[in-house]
Each structure stands twice: as structure tokens, then as C-alpha cells.
Length: 278
Length: 251
Image 1 (tube, helix red, strand yellow):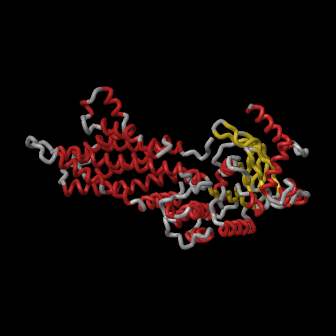
Image 2 (cartoon, chains in turn green, cyan):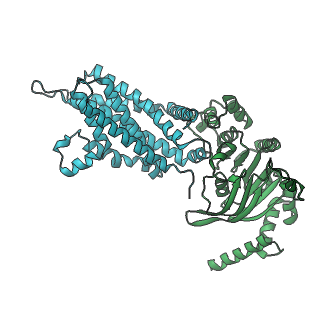
Image 3 (cartoon, rainbow over the protein chains, first blue to last red):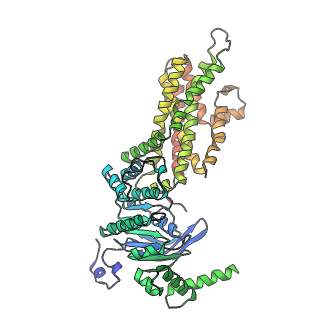
């Protein structure tokens, strides 16, 4: 890797040491049609870790993920993915994406779906079988995707994202609608992937899942509330319960306490928005 | 273009079709049934001696129109599903090139079209004794080119539909005028000037011309090749337009 001596020596938090971040955003602004959806985000996704992207539905999580995957245009600011501008063709073999509503072919079998994406990434049939097994769908290989339950269907989508063995995996609400056992199982798999060097960006609106991440991005109404670790979130939000802690951070931002410029900005924007609404 | 991704896409599209027996029936059986209807319609016509049967005149044209219509329908719906289900956006994040995707569709449906025209042509020849001067292989060739044209138009039109219902609405707009003005109902020379000009701008017209050349001549004529080249050019142009509707980034 490109680690220059000064990089490794800098006394930065744990997640910034070592390899450069997998994703780096600077004043990232994204518009959907004419309305601004992401308002100048600054953040980084540490390499080889599990980063959680958390926020209520409608906060811009999916848009951010689509922008990282290079299918959504950037209005202003910069977004670098694996040290290249987001959307550059060289990235396509290196990234894997699971969309929110499972984008798979419902009229063909589970294995044929995964095989198709395997061949696009130059992987073998054995890789496809492995990916199907990894999401716990062994025994369902020959089943038509349309005949699966909702949770199984979305796992086909996950397998299609895993099969390319990407360096960066972007997963949009991968555990939605899964039973608790499977959910734990998947998070363990994410952990194993990260231990093997894969970077994961996983979105969720279930705060409880935040505790399983190394780093958290808290998104609300297209603003980045904070980037921190689960422990920092508990501390900042003054609650052991992550849901409460998230609320705590929102309230803190709104009342403009604490001198963090990002949060003060946010409080001002909230006030402005309220005044406009009157 | 990448042969591996092209082949994988072709295989996937054919695989999707394989799981849909009704579509396969539409491709392979329906043209022969329609041809049978056309045959029976004109079964009892009385003709002056030496005049060819109506079936021999319009049969070959039917053989070219079926694949065009059916492939247009199939492609526009399949591609629309690809756009709305999110699979297209997902594909755009993978290394696949747009051309691999478009030609994957093209190759898959052309194979089906070739199969379709072989079946329909065989029925026309062996069951109904279709009698034309030219080579049956050329009829199949024109039918396949027509089918690919239907595929290209379907890929293009799917970009302008949001639902499957809207996609089907392109049938009366894009397909039926071409059928009316292609020279099947009224010969090109007998149309009013406006219709002649319109007809000249419609690709289906050239396939009908080519088929009339095949029907009337033992050997392929220069005119027939010219018509086929025009169709090929329109086809490539439409595919190019279709590729422009596949955007990697949405704004």
C-alpha cells in the first residue's frame, strides 16, 4: 500500500491508521432531480472495517450508497472510492452492491442468478455455489427466485454482491425482514469478511445493529450528524441504548449545545427550515 | 465488448425465457397458427389462370412481420423489467459493458427469432405449399433481420415507458403504422405521396420489398441486398440509440 512514513506515524484514531480510507467524501452534495438530498457530507469509510450507515428512512442512505457505487451523479464536492473518483470504470471489478429492494432476476433459479453475476466478475461456478452457501441458501439452488420468501429473496441479492469477492461491499439494508438467528449469522459473516480485509458499508435503520459496526455514520435529512464508534455514540448521546443515544445526538445538534461546528451548522439549518416552513 | 459477459448475458436472457413456457409458445407456435388463419382466409378464392395465390404473395410478408412484432413486444417488456426491478442499475455497477448487455439481448432473441422463422417457414412450405421463386433460406434471413430490428426498437422504446402497460402502448404507435404502410395492404406505388414518404422512412417497408424480390426472382437480386443493407443500417442506428438510453449515472 502507499503508506508513507508520515501517514503511519500520525497519531490518528484507530480507524485512520494503516491503509487509506476506502471511501472519502468532501463536501459531497447530491441532488435528485432538482431537490438537494445530501447536503455537503464530509466523512471517510475506514478500510477493512464494518461501517454502519444509520438513519431513519428518507435520510439519504440509499442515495449516498448509489453515489458511492457510481450510479448517481455528484452535484458538487468530491467522493473518492478506493482512491479513485466514484464511478470510474476501474472500480467496477472491485466493488459489490446490494440494492435495497433485491435486484435479482425473479424468473430464474437462485444459482443461475448468482452464476450470472459471478461470470460478470470473472468468477467460477464454484464461487457461485460458495456465495449461495454463504448466505444460507444451500439446498435452494435450484429454486426459482420468485418462489422464495422475502428474506430468502434478499439473500439471493446479497449472494450476487458477495460472489465478485469485492474489496468494498456496499449493502443497503441487508438484514431487513430476516429472522434474528439469520441476522446474527449475517453479521458474523460481515465481521469475517472485514477480518479478511474487505471493507463493508452497511446501512440499517435498526440502531441495535450499530453495536456490531466498527464505525458509524449517522445520517438525518441528508446531513451527517456524526461519524463515531458505537462507544463514542453511547458517550455523546448519554445513553447505553443506541436508539436513545442517536436521539440524544439529534437533540444536542438541534439545541446547538457543544461547540462542534458541524452540529451548530445543523442546528442553524434546522431553525432556518422551521422559519421557512412558517 | 467482452465475449464472456456477452455469452453470460445471452445465456441469462434465454434462461429467463426457458422458465416462461407461454412466451416460448408465443414465439414458436403463434406465428404458424396465424399463418394457418391467413391460409384458410384465402382458401376458396377464385383466381384467373396464371395468377399467383394471395397466400403466396402475402405469406412471405407475414413470415417477416410476425418476428418483428413478437420480438418487439418481448424485448420491450423484458428490458423494462430490467430497468424497473433495479437489475439494470445493479449491472451498471459491475464490469459489464453496455454493448455486452444490448448484444446479449440481441443475440438471445435473434436465436429465438431464427428458430421461429424456421418453424413458420417450414409450415408455410410443407403444409400450405407456399410457392415462391426464391430461396426459403433468404426468407428466413429477412425474418431474422426483422426480428433483430424488433429487438432494437423494443430496447429503445422501453426507455420511454415506466410500466409494462405503457410499454405495450408502443405497439399501436411504433408497430402498427409500419404494418399498414409497409406495402402489405396497398402496394407502395399506389399510396398517396405523403404515405409513400412515410413508408420510405419505415424499416419494415424494406423487408417487404426484399421479400417481394425473393418471391419474384429465382436468384437474390441487387435490389434485395440493398434493402437488407438499409435494414441493417437502421438496426445498428437503433441499437446505438438504445445504448444511449442506458445511462450508468442518473442525474
